[in-house]
Image (cartoon, rainbow, N blue to C red; front, top):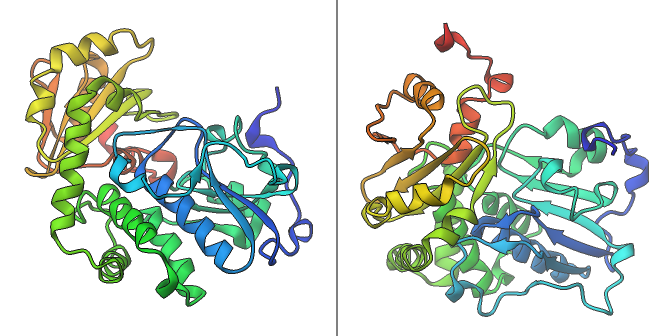
Length: 336
């Protein structure tokens, strides 16, 4: 099987008129699962292109994780099937909230991707060699902020529907830990304020959203955990399987830690769970592998007791991956 990383480069000349009116676009994300950022970005980008006269659909067959609350998706237009009157074979693809081709190869023809919007860094060069200026990969709080930037470029933000604006608001809240994470930028904050003003929502929306997320997690904890597992490759600190939960109060999750461990014992590779407590602004690392406990303790300054360590700061998984990606930051001094 051909390695997706060794695909032949596609010339810029082969991508003329990528954003012409009446063109067909499929806006999608990774094949494993959709979080609220991916979901919101797909819907918002499709809306923007359709306003400009294109024929675009937001589409994915991936399951949604716990961050995609049912109240937010009642009126959304993310499709689970390609419409029969939509010529899929003639469509260009726009990828949102993911850029690792491994997470795309089973669902997206990579030679038809014309744009990528992501806030997980590491594959900028891969895509620049293929689609040039179609690459929008920045270490920013939420991919939703990048999509709103496109609306502003076209001066169409005032035509965004309230439903789409609320999706983007939730995406920013979720992916920035309520605007408190280290990767939150001023652009994330100004985008959040602009969207709130446009949608007519106040600070009370934060509590409503995170309460609904918490209720969903507690109602189906196993599914919430297993719908947000990421494979971590080429990392000297983090286990190869990493789940994440972001809740307002982690107490109800930690009370079921023995049950959680039983579920994860079936995993063939070492794992960890990053449980983020927004109320206390801290993280709880759950890891039963002795070697990885030592690595996590040395690098993040935590102490494990019965397989659980409390980190004084709340770190998102993507922040932890970036911080420990030595191919990117070159910092191996701590290993000495």
